[in-house]
Image (cartoon, rainbow, N blue to C red; front, side, top):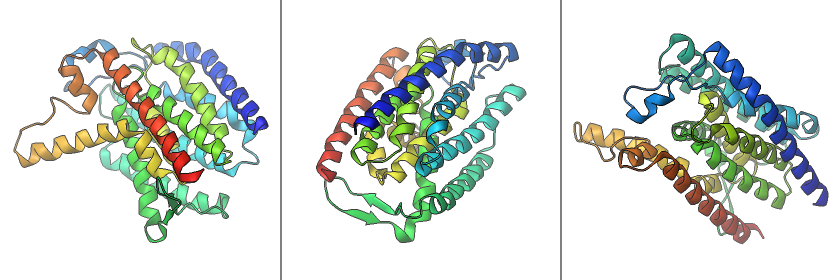
Length: 327
C-alpha cells in the first residue's frame, strides 16, 4: 500500500507538470491555426462572446495522460485497456471538432456517424477485455449495500455498449460551461482512485494521472476559459470513466457519483420527449440543465460551483456506500 501511495503521488504530480508545461504552447498553437470554438445560434446569447476561444484542448490532457503513464503500462493490461478506450473515443471527438473548425460550423459528425463509431469502439473494448483480462470477470456488477454481484452474462455486450456510449455522451452534454465537465470529472477520478486502491486494482495509476492532468487543465479552463476541451476531451473523459467503472465492476457507482452527468442527459431526453408529446411545449427553458439555470438568472460561475459541490457530495456518498458494500 505504501508503494501504491508513492506511485500515486508521483504520477499525479508528473501528469500535472506535463500538462502545465504543454498547455500554454498548445493553446498558442491553436490560436495560430485559428482553431476556435463555433457557438450554436440556438444556445444562450451570453455564450456568443466565447466564439473563437481555442478548442480541442482535450488533446492537451490526453497527451499528458499518455506521457505520464506510458512507463507504467507494460505490466498493467487494465491500464492499457482504459488508455486505448479513452484515446479511441477521443479520436471520434477529434474528428467531430476538426469538421466543426474547418467547416466553420457548430455541427461536426452526423449523429449516426458518431453513434456508429462509438458502437464499433465499444465492441473493440469488449474484445480487448477478453484478450487482455482473461482471468477477470467483467460481467459482474457490484450491487450497492450488499455483498452480491449481479452476473450480466446474457446482457453483457449491450450493457457495456450502453455504458460506454451513455457515459461519453453524458460528459459531452455537460461540457457547456467553463470548467464544468473537467471539474466534475476530477472529483469522479478521485473517487475511482480511492476505489481502485481499496480494491487493490492497478488502475489507480491511470485515475491519479487523469486527476493531475485535469487539475492542471482547469487552470486554463476555469472561467473565463482560455481553452475548451472540445468533443476530443469530453468523449474521451466519458469513455475513461465508463471503462474504469467496468474494470472495477462499479458501474452503478459511476451513476451515483456522476449523478450530475446522468441528470444533464435526462434533462435533454425529457425535454425532447415532452416537446414532441405536447407539440411544442417545454419543461425546461433550455437543455442541458445547466442552460436552464443560466436562463433563470444564475451566473455561470455559480452554476459550476453548485454542480461541483453536488458532485463532491455524491462522491462522498459513493465512498460510504463502497465501504458498506466491500469492507
